[in-house]
Every structure is written in C-alpha cells, then in structure tokens.
Length: 138
Image (tube, rainbow, N blue to C red; front, top):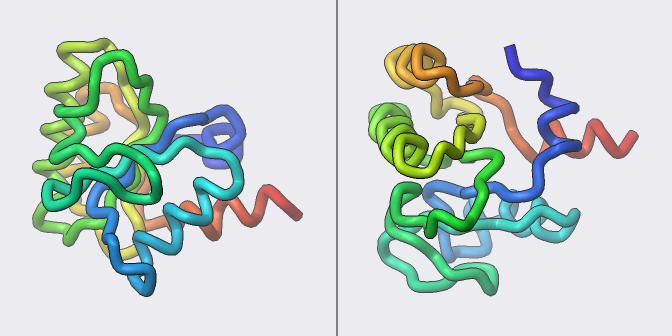
C-alpha cells in the first residue's frame, strides 16, 4: 500500500505518460500544476520533442538513465496501462530505478496493477495527482 502523502512529499520527478500538448486537456493541466508546485515533469509523448519546456520522450524506457523518476503518472486508456508498466519494468531492469506507478481516475487495469505489484513497484489506482497534492496544502 502506497502512502500517498509521503510519496508526494518525498518525490521530485514525475514522468507524465500521455501528456497532451493541448492546454485544455486534463493531462496538460495537471502536469502544468505539478510543475508549478515544484516537481520536475518528464513528458512522455512519442509525437512531441518538447512539452512544458521539457524534453519529451517516446516512452518511459527512453528516458535517460541519469534521470531518477519517482512517479510514473499515466494518462492513457486502461488497455494501454499494462504496456506502460512493462515499459517501466524494462527501465527498472536496466537502471534499478523503481518508480511508483500512478494511474489517473479511470485508467487502472487489474493486469497492470498485478504486474507492477508482483515486480515490487508501488501502484496507485484511480487517483488524481492534482487532487491528492492539493490535500497536502490544507
């Protein structure tokens, strides 16, 4: 079980999978908020070279090894979540970096959760990072 307040207090870098370049999209609004409150955002979008002033990568696995990722925040449809977890696990195998997998509301899948947990990764199911972070501010 992941202690969400502790995770958010102790994390510095969040990879945002499915970060949209469109300012009206939820992923963009939440990533911009997280950036504004002090997190480093690592955009994951294979169709963009840069988002929110940061280099964008086509996958979590493609993020340079020297970047320590604390949370992988997923904004993809549930059927793609397990592939993102597999991507995280390949990077973990190579780097030893074991971030928490965070699925936004409506994004989780039982298969992805089982894969992550069985591999020793923390997993947050169907929670909004913006909402959870704003609770810390109270």
